[in-house]
Length: 118
Figure (spheres, helix red, strand yellow):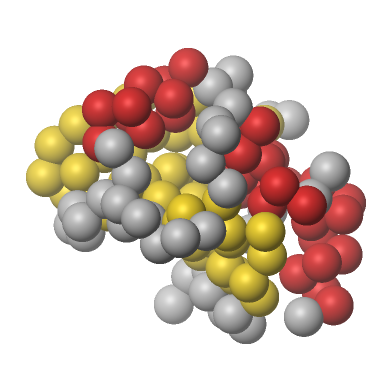
């Protein structure tokens, strides 16, 4: 099983699909956005940061956003998403269940440190 970063609202609310897709599509580094019926997702796109790419998805129930892997590109996507929304987001590392408030994390290094301390 591959690592994933699971992102959801602090209050576990569903994301507004159209607003969230528009937000993700507007992020620097997003390419090839796709709407449709994917396995477990209604939207997916590629996110590139520093030459590395991850796939980001919105779940079919619109309760979660995932980024594949735990590389810097996945962490940067999560931080970028939080910086561009008023919704307070939480992130869970699916490998060890670290549960972090993204609004409290200022950098990729701080994000990685927080994951490793959990």
